[in-house]
Length: 366
Image 1 (cartoon, helix red, strand yellow):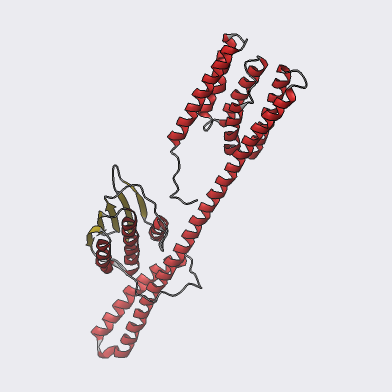
Image 2 (cartoon, helix red, strand yellow):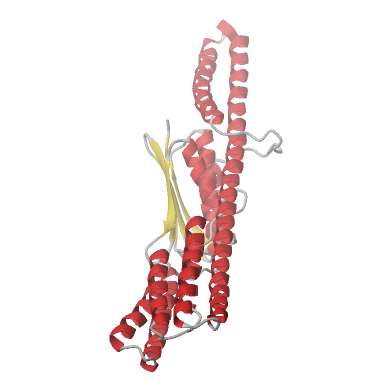
């Protein structure tokens, strides 16, 4: 199901159940006044038939047991012969919320109890029509509840599959980008090794500088290779020929966001390795894109602080706090979380108190 589809708040649904409990209790109190049953019996039964409806979502099976028992007692006491509508109401919740075996047992036991109560209250064969009507009503309610449960289960599985697919695609994309970074480093190593071999003893200073670059690039490449081996690579994916973005590309990103109605205050301190710079850029890019999509016009503060041991990334806007994230090339929060997880960092995102939305990540440098 589309996550943007409006869902009723839980408090609203509980409020409707409470209203149903009041209506049913009041109705049965009227039945008690018109029946020959004594008030000491009828009044408690009216409450026991109506009150459990208020908790049918939290305790469906317990509510069904109380309602069915009270309705059967009311039928035997000739308080009413209505077709067990409260039982059908609770039966829907049992079928929708309980496992299949429990729901089937509850349906069978309820129909048997109702049939026995009607048989005691009404002479044969006058009770057959009412028993049939009760069976159809309660059975239809049960079938509707099971259909709802199956649909919800399908939607949950579909959402889980979409999330899993998004994670896989994002890992493939990360692998491709890391592959490009590693390939660039290996190319640099090959070039510098060629220079060192060519100049040899004639230019010792240039040779030492080439060896120093080779040593640094080799260590960085080994680190990125370890990360590359931890994610999947799509063999049939199209090769991206554009150079990998980094911290130096953030001002251009800010400029594009301002054209879309989002004023961005950018603060960047310190350099980072190429692969980590790519991760920082993608996190900021996805966060600012979400602001443009869901909060514009708004203002946004982007901070990238490089310390001795980690890089702290913060993207905070003053737009609406509630929004739909995801979709697009980076898969929203899933993509950002996966990128941070590659480096063993921490990630958080969510609405702020009152107004605004914040995305924060901390990525270790080593």
